[in-house]
Image (cartoon, rainbow, N blue to C red; front, side):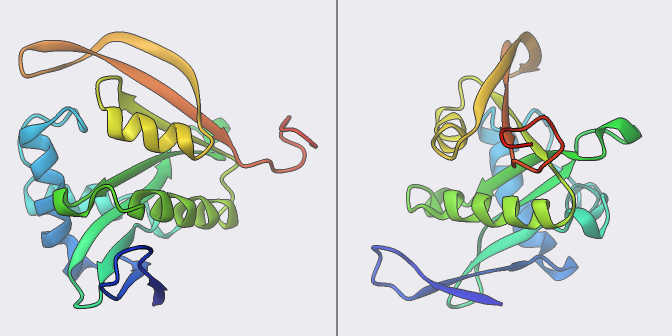
Length: 185
């Protein structure tokens, strides 16, 4: 466990730690909120327990999800960096996802979780991290842009949810490993 003082709240500490299967129901509640109420995910129907387990744990230990918990052990959010593609040439490229409980947004938790995910991803051999974000998802676009991700492209009208076609931004961050064509490499 990694206790960290929660900045600016005065309410105690938060803990960032790996998710375990017992955390999946709380993570599913958070995720399904966004499925039903937003374009933060392009799933259109709530995930059942098996589908949520696959989303969280289906990419193996290299992509172990992390959770943000309050001092009472309540899950405030979760995220992971999964493989971008199973094709070998993409082995060093990951895709980040971060979801916070609705009441946990705006407190810097997403930024802190993303930083920890990037550290873990670098240790696990990822060199480039992508984020695929609906362009109308201002909170996620802001989070990724403020943490050093650049828009690499916009896919026009590729998503469809709530009866509308949606654009998807591809944001990219190079973790700067030598020999990758990254700065200093």
